[in-house]
Image (cartoon, rainbow, N blue to C red; front, side, top):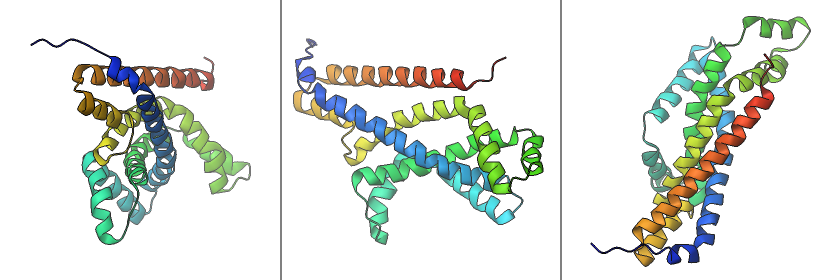
Length: 220
């Protein structure tokens, strides 16, 4: 086999790869932001005394976590229109990734809530805060700081999951890498560059989030 490396075709379309990388990061940021709201609501439902809310939250988490995300993407994009719900490619993927993230973040937040000292809630109520105000001003901020490492890992994982958006032709990094590969037959070059872009992006995301964790850490 006489295969000679030639990255010229990749460099010619490197701007497309960069735009795809930017879109992937944007999809991950929006999805984890929206998914956090779903995760918080579901986490409080999971630890509530109301059996109905606990049942709904547990059903949601179990169903989503045990279904491959690619199946969820196809269901949202191809099946929902049969019920009259039509979304664009990007909107469809964000919708799927948001609910997928929400299910995983539910467990992260639930663990964080259960680990909080019981006196925290009681202290808020003792100084005259309402139940809602106590959750908003004390419970959630302290819990978020405690689970930040897990949130960081989930964000990186979600960013890597954006590569699956190529399955419904969302123009992110994997989509453009595959396009370059098909048009130029530079298999090794296109996927090597795409892989390195994912690696460096994940590295800088992790480094930035670790720095943020250290800033929020309580001095020992």
